[in-house]
Amino acid sequence: QLQLQESGPGLVQPSETLSLTCAVSGGSITTVTYYWGWIRQPPGKGLEWIGTISSSGTPYYNPSLKSRVTISLDTSNNQFSLKLSSVTAADTAVYYCARQPHYHDSGTLKHEGFDYWGQGTLVTVSS
Amino acid sequence: QTVVTQESSFSVSPGGTVTLTCGLSSGSVSSTNFPSWYRQTPGQAPRTLIYSTNIRSSGVPDRFSGSLLGNKAALTITGAQADDESVYYCVLYMGSGISVFGGGTKLTVL
Image (cartoon, rainbow over all chains, first blue to last red; front, top):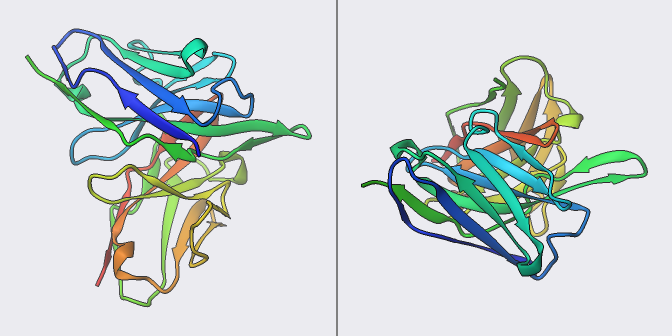
C-alpha cells in the first residue's frame, strides 16, 4: 500500500523559505507512470495546486507561485521536496503531497488526477 | 489565468439525487482535461472519488458517477446519505503538467 508522509517545520518566519519533504513508501518515485504533486489549503479555504514533478525530475509550477517555488526529487531517499521562498502570512496553510498517475498508453495520454494523498502538515508563517 | 468554477453550495434531501458541476471561466471542459473529483471532510485529507471524467476510484460506491454535461464536468450522487455531507472539489488538467482546482462545493444533506 502506497503511503505518503509530509514533514518539515510547522512555523516559518515571514520572508524566509518554507521547506517540506514528502517521504514515499510502498512504491518508487522513479516509476515512469507517476508524477508527484504538492497542494495546499489555507485555513477555511479551498485547495490550491502548487506544482508537480515528473518521475524524471521535470517540474511544473502554478503560474501564480512559479517565481517562488522549487520542487525536486531525492531518489536516494525515495522522497520529493517543496521549497517556497519569501513567505508571508498568506502562505499559511495545510500542505499536502500526492501522487498523480500520468503516462502514455499506446500513444494516448492518460492522466488520473491525484490518487494517493499524504495526511497534510500545517505550516504557519508568523514571527 | 484559468479559473475552474463550481457551485459554492448545494443541498439535497436524504435519498435524493444531486449533480455538481465543474466548468471553465473560458471554454468547455472536455475529456482531455481528465476531470477528477474529490471529497473532503473537516480535518481530513481529500479522498479521490472519480478520475478521467467517469472512472470511480477503488472502493467508491457506484452511487457516485462522473460525466460530461454540456460544456462542464459533472459529479452525480444518487441516493444521498447523511455522511455525503462534505466539500467536493474538481480538478482539471490543463496540459503542460498544470492542474487547476475548482473552489469546491459544500454539499448539505437535509
